[in-house]
Image (cartoon, rainbow, N blue to C red; front, side, top):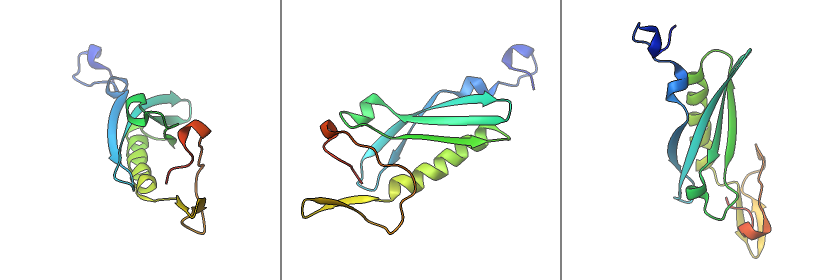
Length: 120
């Protein structure tokens, strides 16, 4: 496949990135991500970082997914995964304590003191 400068009308996947997309969290908050794509000898990696504007004073979300075949498959996997992860409340505060809402947690929960603690 040739890029747009090759004269055959095809546009390179690099022209489609970075992009910004918004998704809704379990708490109803709209979370906006900047998605970058990198190519390696073994495939494509989509890295999504919550934008500064979206995260405010929180630490924000980060996610990375991989496709050995196609950058758009990596983007599709990001979309599938982020909708599932943001729709799931992982922690909640009760009686002054933070606890898991499920018996099993997949991923990592980060927070900083200035962030006010974990958010589900």
